[in-house]
Structure formats: C-alpha cells, structure tokens
Amino acid sequence: MRVKFCYRELILYPPLRQIDIVAVRRQNLGARKLDRPARGPKESVEMKAIVVHEFGPPEVMKMEEIPAPKAGAGEVVVRIRAAGVNPFDTYMRNGTYAIKPPLPYIPGGDGAGVVETVGEGVTKLKPGDRVYLGHPITGTYAEFTLARESDVQPLPERLSFAQGAGVYVACSTAYHALHHHAKARASETLLVHGASGAVGIAAVQIARAIGLTVIGTAGTDNGLELVLREGAHHAFNHRTTGYQDAILKATDGRGVDVVIEMLANVNLGADLKLLAQYGRVVVIGSRGDSTITPRDIMARRSSVTGFTLWSISDADAADVKAGLAAGLENGTVRPVVSKELPLGEAVRAHKEIMEPGALGKIVLLP
Ligand code: NAP
Image (cartoon, rainbow, N blue to C red; front, side, top):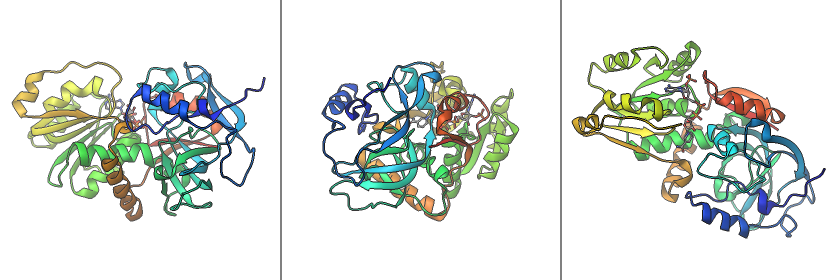
C-alpha cells in the first residue's frame, strides 16, 4: 500500500530551540503542506527515506519512497551524502525521548551533502555547495532533507561527507560543554568520561588544542588507542576496576578540574570524588538515575551542570558555529568515522550505536 505523505506530518526537527512540546506541535501544525507551491527547480521528485510510523524497536524503521521536500522561503534542500547516527535517534524512535515527534517522521538530526535547491531569500548558499547541517526540518535519514539556511554550514574540502555528518551534534555538544558550560581554561585538567565516541573524540580534540591536560576513558583497547591518537595525554579503561584511582594518580592526587560525562547514571557519584577544588561536571549523557554524596560537592565547592543541545541559545549557537568553522578549517576538529552503512541498514545502525566499543561516528549513506 502506498502511503500519501504530507510534510506537515513529516516535519521532524521543528526549529527546536527549546524543548517545548506544545510549541513544537503548534509549529508543526503551522508548517507547510507538501502540495503548497514552493520554489525549487525539480517538481515531484521522489526520494528514498527511512520512515517511522510507530514508536518502538529498531525494526519500526522502514525504507520508503516518498516525495522529496521543497525549499520554502529561507530554506534549503540538501542532497544527503551521509547522515549522522546519534544515540538520541534511538531514544526518539523508542518514544522515550523528551522530544516526541508527530508520527510518521524521518529520523536523523545531522548530516552532510550538497545543496540541491534554495528557497526565496537564501543568500549564503547556492546549489552545488558542500555543506554539513543539523537541526533539520525533515530528518536526515533520507536522500534529501529540508533545513533552514541558518542551520546549514559550509563543509571544507578537507573533510569527507561522512566526517561532515559527524560535525553538528557531536562537535557542537563538545564545544558547548567545554566553552560555555565548563568555561575550561588552558591550565586545567579535563576528564572526558567516555572519550571513544563521537562527542568524546571531539571534546578531546578541542580541549587538547586549547591547551588543557586531557584524560580520556574508553572501554576497549582499540578505544584507548584512538583516544590517545586524537590527543589525550592519558587514557584509562572505564571497564576495569580501580581506574578512578589511576585517574587521580595521574593528577598527583589533586583531581580534575572538569569532567565531561557521557554516562552520568553510572559515573556521577564517582566523578564528584575525582574533582579538584572548584571542579565542574558537565553532564552530556545519562540513561537513568544516579546516587551521589552531596558532601563531595560541598567539600570541593564544585558544581554539576548539564544541557541538551536542542535548547542552546541563539548567542551560544552562533559562537559554536564560529568556533567549529575555525576548528574545521585549521584541522583541530576532525570527526572520526567508525562505520559507514547504507541507508537501508538503519536498523543495524541503531542496534550498533547502543553497543559498547565505540570508535567514533556511525553514519548512513543514502
Ligand atoms: P557514542 O558515540 O555511542 O559514544 C558513547 C561513549 O560512551 C563511548 O565513548 C563509550 O565508550 C562511552 N561509555 C560507555 N560506557 C561507559 C561508562 N561506563 N563510563 C563512561 N563512558 C562510557 O555516543 P556519543 O554520540 O558520543 O554520545 C555520548 C552520550 O552523550 C550519549 O548518551 C548521547 O545520548 C549523549 N549526547 C547528549 C547530547 C546533549 O545535547 N546533551 C548531545 C549529543 C550526545 P566505549 O564504547 O569505548 O565503552
């Protein structure tokens, strides 16, 4: 059976500056219908896309042929050459994430490719430009995606499309955590707790470039090797007993100034004991509750902060864009791609992103 699609329903990442589900739904309802006239040279183009009709396990994702989006005013259609696979894609697909998109939807929060068409008023981009993007209006697990001009950035020649698909979510998160939340300084020591994944590698690269002493953790020998290769001064295995003691020892018992934490439900309590005076933990990822000893915070005058990238302020987002543009240009920011899978293997990608043994970014190739 052929399902008729309407982009009013397929809009996935409504311009989500804040997680406000009611506003998101209102925005979606206001979004354009597929048949509304829009600018773009190609009429009635069909595309392959991964579509989710009901929340559930990876198998709810199905490859379908649906009409490609068209660019309205201020919007850009990008031909996706690689789509980033992020852990939150799986939470969203499960229906357990803070953002629950109206069904059906196309998954995928970032990607890279080539500008196909631009809508009225778009001035900074033109068809043929190599770009990376995030926060799209329609998901990136597709041959084409629709995004606002401001969410589409140039992709330097030195980066492949697969690397480009690893920029928006992972690198923005690392940059935002280090600069805006931790306010990290060159003389400080950083622990990237979970450094072998996409966000962790970006945090290691950026922190090392700024001048921090960087300690990273991974759960496999290959992961440890990768973390050291990408710039960490020390690497420890978070699956071995007593590794926290080794981290403290590496700081001569002083503790670390900043922790960028990928799995707070497991590590937050221990992180607080690893901090130096005035240390800061920035919670990036958590998959459950955590028990802490509040006196650890008091004794060190430390703090715990956290964020979701989707609620970043416009000012911080502009700062991140500028910082990443410089980092991509000068080679500081170099996304590491662990696996390139065909778009049709989205189910496998969602299973593998949740398995241990991360070595960078998993991407889907339409
Ligand atoms: P990823 O590529 O799958 O990496 C996951 C990382 O967590 C790997 O380095 C993994 O190491 C590590 N890890 C696994 N068990 C750990 C443990 N017990 N202690 C410390 N680290 C452990 O995922 P990602 O894209 O980097 O994202 C990392 C986390 O941040 C995810 O939970 C994601 O949902 C979250 N995130 C949040 C935001 C935000 O806006 N707050 C944005 C992006 C991502 P091994 O596999 O080597 O064991």
